[in-house]
Length: 538
View 1 (cartoon, rainbow, N blue to C red):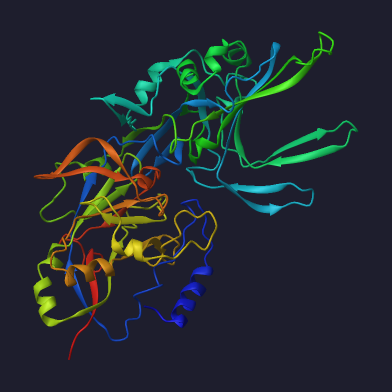
View 2 (cartoon, rainbow, N blue to C red):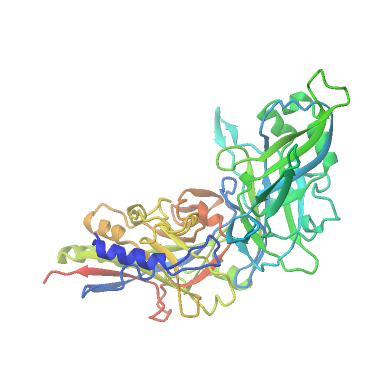
């Protein structure tokens, strides 16, 4: 329990830091909030067994945010991220009208962004969030009709089981794409062959019947003109039965597939996006339904097709292809991982990446002695030191997440921490007492990640039946998401034990970091240990 004065100090320190949603904008919240002044408390340090664990192909059809693009990391290698999604009509059985003639079909998906300036003319200046790689990066972007029927479930022995799609299935969807790309207007290369994530807002000017102008501004978004002839035939000329219900429509129009390749002569980059906010707006003209109008009278109409929400309905998948660097690939190879003495370096990376397994066996072996001496735990921390030399030139994840790997659930300290982010929309800034936020050195590079596991340690001491579980460490895109996704293939850790899941928020984050492990050969000032502060009876 902390007194009011101490809490005020916490808030004062925290509010001095502005948190962005982008991983490149770091903060030091969590490093000095707790545990730095212990007022004469006695500490004990315990060895920690820690080693690498590769995360192979993993379920990616329920991600709130997904990656699109190509990100080259100087430490971990290159990741290419494609995306596939089902689509759904906003309104089924629409009245299309007689003799419809399409005017445009526009795909739009908002980017994560924030306003940096409000201009005097009513416009705004934006900065994009969650962009990885050079800000001026370009891609060859192709959007195709998908020919693969995605489902949310499949029948098995008389019951419906959830259908999973995995990060490794890009070739399946690439081979199933139909026809040529839909964003095919080569007079606008910024929408296809030289596509880039633009921070410019959109300005639209409309006039009413009295010629009064209204200006509307739209925040930065992906906006692509799609092939009009395709949507004229696929939607406006569709048989009525094909657009009458969800199931039939998703069999008829199976979705869209986003494919990225390197653009000629340009570096590439990657963005995290919420595809569920995307839509295709079809604008067309058709004869009016008013019988008293002249036969040639037409009116403008729209039909909107939504990209489905992966967390609530339909099928989606973030499709990842990794070209790992030699150093990273070797470090996480099962033949090189040392599960007896631990690894000197822990490589943790999001996506189809890697995690670290943490075992507190040394502390657990001393529990009887701690109980007998009646030591009271005031605080317990794991402090992970970043290998800044190996991480030179690489973007660093803003936060890591420690969890109960044995049961794939959060730790007691996670639940006990009710602090919220001090910046609206920051998915990584909450639960800062629990920790895991990056702490920066004077050079503005990452120095440590500190995680508080006081409640977990207290419980082991107080409850002799409590199990000393294996802990998992991953990067995270959102500290509020603790659900796990299944790996396509289970990985054996040791007899009768499986690494079969990984936290969902880790899959959403493309970054990685290298931490010093607990192996005896690691320099003492960098070695991973459990540090516990006790009140000891006289």
